Length: 415
Figure 1 (spheres, one colour):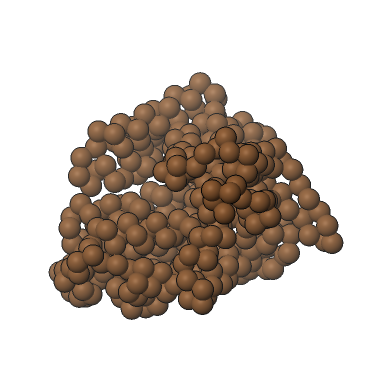
Figure 2: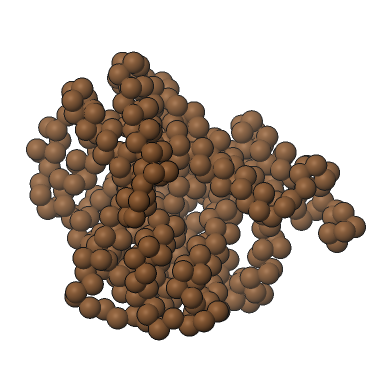
């Protein structure tokens, strides 16, 4: 792969507007995760900014990647916040960072091939599908004007459905018909359109925004370490670890550089791990590479990694704007529900597509057993408890996939 001198790190003040634009591309998805899970959006902004800077240091300022909130952990975060509380959930999220770091050390020691053999697509694809499918009822409930668990009605159903479907329609239209940078921010466009509609319908209350200070320290929350919460969340890291490779390969194809070799995917994953650990310690969601930002880099054809430095600095600065966090929390649940109808379905499709691209024969008995049991265990609310250890949902699905892949005999042609 040819080297591209345009991707050398050059920190210049004149590049600040372009770098800030990268945050705009990531903003909708970045704040969506904390808004859905009950975490603080200002803390998420701060963690994304600081995390990206840490990532740049550990990758020797070579890779133009921005780290933002990971969608893969929405369902387990929601479950753990409700079951174990926010501090225990954050402790588990910090452990996700350790899982990333451990995987990075394994890659450094044994190479990428070992990890890919341990976590092949036949495991990660169905796990990603379970993540999307298990979240589907949350999106439907919120689109209908209820709380995420469907326990309480927040808005009249007819009004909520109108707003949610309008948000969904705008998101889909921008994703399909949008041009240039507009096509990279369909979530932001959908949220904006739904929010405007909500204003006209009197669904927005600005009292919290008026009461919030202009500048305030983000509401950081410290972690507590609970084994049950850790066992629910950490196995979910299987899918994002594999996705990380895809993110690094994608930006390498855009810039014309082989980042798997230089600075090395182990450095990249280590950077993500340290950033995610810090986020868990401060009250933010786990971090991951953002494909939206990679798309923006491809569009503007400016490969200078310093753009991500400016995006990160902008995120940190915005984290201290108290009214911004209060404003984000005024977004009505039907607006978010409309976006989630597409988003959670898209997560499922990503997992399905990975199996399609791999060319996996799902009717082959071994593959059928692995995929079937991952999905049924994950979606069927199967739970195992032994020796004080409790596993269920996505976490159990991930563990089942890894174990089955390791113990089931392979067909002669794959051996």
